[in-house]
Length: 463
Image (cartoon, rainbow, N blue to C red; front, top):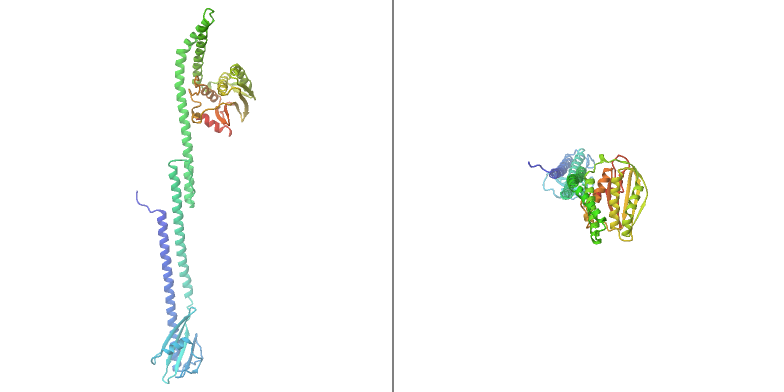
């Protein structure tokens, strides 16, 4: 990569050039001042000398003043013969007379140059004159121009240095923010003070946000793909299991039930046959759940308008004897009418109610509430159980995940598959000491859209 000077280096060079220009202007101002003083001094000396020469030649009266010149004549003893007494600068010139040539002296006061000239004539008299140096008409304008140039150079240097610092600090802020993004795309990026760098920072923030969304969508798609692959594999397994196992299971259960009805069978054997029949029934339900889970398809669901409140109450009544044994009550409230596959939704409700009863402590109540909102129907099941450990919430709706010793881990997966086939989903959350599962079904053939109150819960469901 070829070497390219940075903006900071370029601004530093501009500042250096501006300082050089400022120095050159200041030096020019100094030279101009000195040159102007020399010119003024030379003109004043010329005026004073000419005035003394004219006095000696008798062409100038001592009291006459011309172009800022004063003159006079003193006796050899220092008395004034004509004109006023000489000022200090003239006395200095008189004190330096050493021959018949004109001597001069210079004084500067309040920016004004005064030149005194003196000459001793053949009669011993002292002729003197004082001239004030005139100021040229164009000199102040030149001074002003040079001064403006000097101040402009100084201001340019200051501006360049300040801009260089702002660019340097802004680049450092931007670089630090990008460094943080290397490990965390959600890290904040401070806004530099320079407008152009602030625009770049905003674009970087938007790009990081887009990458976060893309990663989230990619993770969601990967999760869905993995779930679909698992369901496809599960479907193949279920089909094989159903073909190879279900018929033998039905035959075994029939023979066990017939044997249990035989009065000649001892009571202890009859109890074993009852347990065996229950286990065979459990295996049959497992095969049925596997088939239902693998055949989940929205296009194949036959949906007819049904009362959700009536359906939930019917399933609660079926489970009531079993719940009474655990000393847990089931309470149902609310109602809604939705197009559903009644058998599939009934299985999902059974799974949610069974889980809630099993998780509830003795003497507690399980509440099922039905309500409608935004063309979406919700069946919410609330219990007083411990819930699922937070670190395992992501596994909650995966097939074969269970926290019960005798569970199959298919109930919640089947409930979610049923809800999704109805354009909805199943969510989980904790509300204080309560566990809340909510099953959503669409009120029409349109897919379910989570409301603001259920967005967080949907995230639990999707894992």
